[in-house]
Amino acid sequence: MRHNNSRYAFLVSSPLDLRRGYGTAAAVLGLLGALHRKGKRVGLLEPSPLPGSDLFRSWWFNRHVSTELARLDVDCVVGVDFDGYRYARRATRKPFVSLLHGVKADELLWETGSSKSRLARQARWERVAARHADLVVAPSAYACRRACETYGLSPDRTRVVPNGLDLDHWPAMPQPAGAPTVTAAARLVRRKGLDVLIRAWPEVRRVVADARLQIVGDGPERDALTALAADLGQSASVHFHGVMSQSDFRRCLTDTHVFCFPSRQEAFGLAMLEAMASERAVVASSEAALPEVAGDAALFSDPSPESIADGLVRLLTDTALRLSMAQRARRRAESFTWDHAAALFGEALSDA
Image 1 (cartoon, one colour):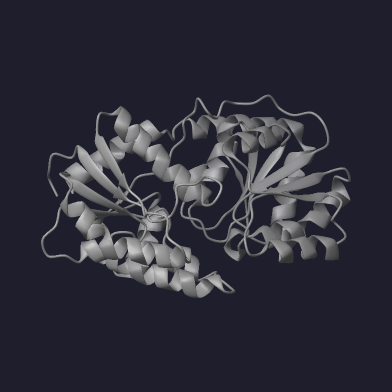
Image 2 (cartoon, rainbow, N blue to C red):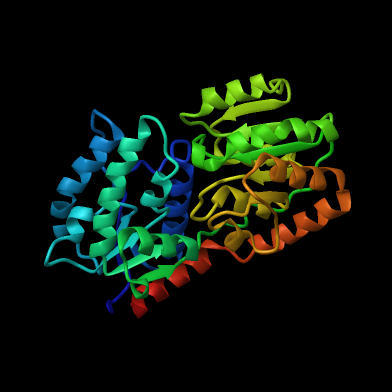
């Protein structure tokens, strides 16, 4: 796929709204900004406001995007997740890259409730986009492997381009005073493992009686998680903050002693990386891409209440260990920048 590699059209049918879909929006906006700084001409095609569901909006956008692309003079079309799946099937087209923030078919294994059918449809679209793409880019080796396994891809058509950070926006923070505080940030769905964290919380409180837990994010599991905290007698110490802006999340981290990311399935873990950049010690699940991203800069736990509780208690009660892990986390996060990601993205397209 050798070409001028300087003019990209990105297709995104989901709103790039940090409050609605934080991970994907932050990843796409970060990469676009870095490509622009490198002198690339980057265009973004998004759907017009339409009535109906997000799924309908995505379908409508993909049905008509080929007409829009025909008017553009670009070297390469980049479809985010499943977007561009209809364009990817065209016999005559510009080189097409499938940019996977996650792997929908892998996420589907953990989905429950009414959103399962929506995600199943998106996974079918994503399979088409990935299988017809000239190149598939994903944020971790784990995500590339799962894309190959679930979509039947050849590994030589995949590349790893990790997500990044703007480190100026995520400075290291002084360590907090006050009550021992654990923070988790994720969409409230089953695969994120927040039910495991809440089940672990009574054991944490048994050892650290004044500890408090704050959960940032929203989603279909919120009522169930709130009820679980109440059933375990933890309502007073577990606080659900809902969706936060990026600046509010940074402020939330100022009071955080330990960040916990107990996800059962994760293609990268951008919120964890942001906490690491803020110089916060991390307890993370040992599943999926999290060890790959955090390296030796986190305590890893099985996604079980006992293991999560053990990791949190260790960091909350051992100040020297917590400070050492916080410093290690910051150093690890400094290796993930959007400028580096943009350079890898350009290399991947040039070499494919």
